[in-house]
Image (cartoon, rainbow, N blue to C red; front, top):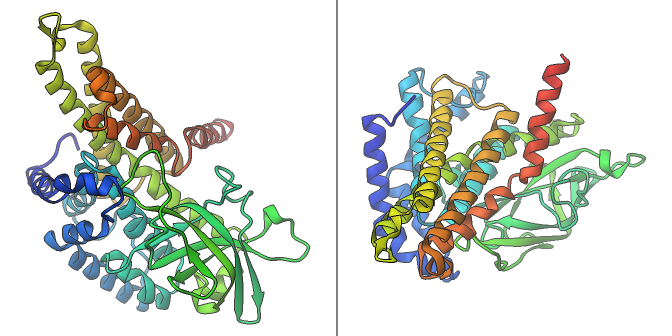
Length: 416
């Protein structure tokens, strides 16, 4: 794939109009925490029939699983590659367009519809999928995926202290999570913790996941935390004190207790999905920063000339365009892989995420530089985009963790 198809371009234009009409007028309220993003996101889903499409795909998947048919591969669905490409594009285009103005909304949407539901659909029983996943896919309920803890950070598994103690067919959950997207508002939370096992070192214990509902006794969700950027994406803390749940809330049921590394692999799959989507987020940020910078360079006059006449400004604009082209090609590769029923490997998703995050931050900061003093002021959009871009180098694994994942794969390949 080397360019947007006519149908895909039409979808982009339609989504862009929606964003300009429904999101842009509300950015101020979204940024200051006065307006949670979920109402606008639900309107987006209703406007473009996304809830109904999700409901139809879900029914098809569940019917197939009940008949014992194999799960479709990522990027599957229609047997027609062109249809699969359009489906992938239809998923990525709203991400790009929302990130041009309000990247935090994408994080809130992606964690609920993407990470939380994906974890349930990947590892849950059929009963759990029917009970929890569909409402997340349609945005009827908001989801949170809780892995990060105050003392863990990049060492998500090794540093994890949240625990599940088995008592017959029930479990008692304890622990806390932080930096949890949608945490303050989530109706459904996938809580990842370690199973208490006598004689097993804490770092080596099984990773298990539980599906929790808001309001369970002992389960507390904090209010929104204050942070540098992504103000339109509510982030909070979770606290569990002797939360008692049954086997029906253990993701995967009894079978989940049999596999030693199953929990880790499931979380790794979720990270892979999250990382591969960062290129689309970065593309939206970079496109908007470039557009604003070109416009400003034409209009801003210094020393009796538009600043766009100066070679140093031209250099910045040219490098922004190179980043935009590279990010767009990464998005096109994602769509092309989906068209062929494939997805990025873990290392490739890490590489894409590493480049995309760095490109978004560099372009956004250069946009601030083009604007000069104005770029540092909150009334100008580039100030917000610069703050929002930075988190791309942190969440879903820091830049340093991406480098580690890429290098490990390269070294493993060279040794083979």
